[in-house]
Length: 416
Image 1 (cartoon, rainbow, N blue to C red):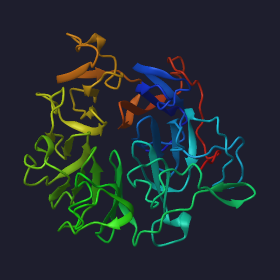
Image 2 (tube, rainbow, N blue to C red; image 1 turned 90 degrees about the horizontal axis):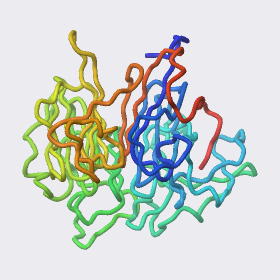
Image 3 (spheres, rainbow, N blue to C red; image 1 turned 120 degrees about the horizontal axis):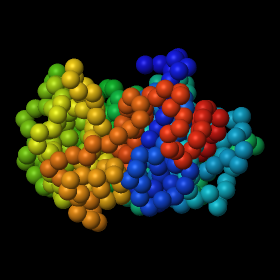
Image 4 (tube, helix red, strand yellow; image 1 turned 90 degrees about the vertical axis):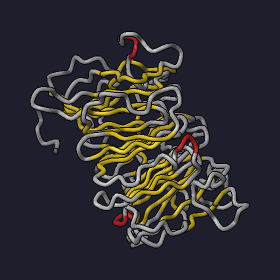
């Protein structure tokens, strides 16, 4: 779909935890239960969402990454007081410890991911003019997740490149292009096009494989992980595990980590014909091409897959909740639904459910909450108790309740 039809526009609706502005609505609120418009008239038509403890990275189809939320440890970088012409430049503003509106971070990103207090960006090959992938990390990491050796914070290691500003040196390039990139609580993993799997960060729960050094608790620089026995095409991470899958026609899959909650002992023999995968802190979700959803792992406070679930078209998996778009049929339009731990509003307004989920955790279990969003839903995303919905709406629908009336996200600001 393209944005050529001037009678329509793309809007971003958000709900969930927002105590550090991570929803990008322009203000801070502990909990947002009612879907709120954060962006009106977005310059993108698809998105992917990742997030850390209280910060969010939104990547669009053009390679732009917009960021919002906590920046106490510079997990979002340093911000320009005025947009310079330089593509990657920065002016330090120590007082800027959070961003309450989505702001352009980079416009040259192939993949991005986030751990609890850090962010990482895999740059597009055309931007780096290199065959090998260049990765930037920033923020704080006590377990090697910055990939910078003994460095545990990037707040003081900026390297001046020009009078316009400064930026961080990248990590050593990986030996091939990245095919998939993900992060857990304290580790990063990349699948390369040559079939290798690389990772760094916390390793004490075998989330980076069974390493030869039994005493290894962390990997502080990118390292090739042990061979997995098949060609990987995609990865996702839970809190302390990594889930790697082969092509849908192949169906092989592998978990790096421990058998917490039956995570490994209950995994199916094959996930052939998978469409998408995701992971909460302690469980794995597989959406199949026929619209069915399968999950296994620790069932903490809520049933992983509610009974009677209709066929799904999209899924977005947060730290402890699921956001999904049902498949439209001749008799029923697609619907946005959610279940899981909804304490912060990330499952929408659950007060109208009959009966409402018990306070304070508001866990939606054995059923789902149906969420009304204006327009036609294009893309959904979820992170740490946060939910994001990109919709196509007709321009005359300008009287919708919103926080940011007009936010044009264009390639203007650059921060590092």
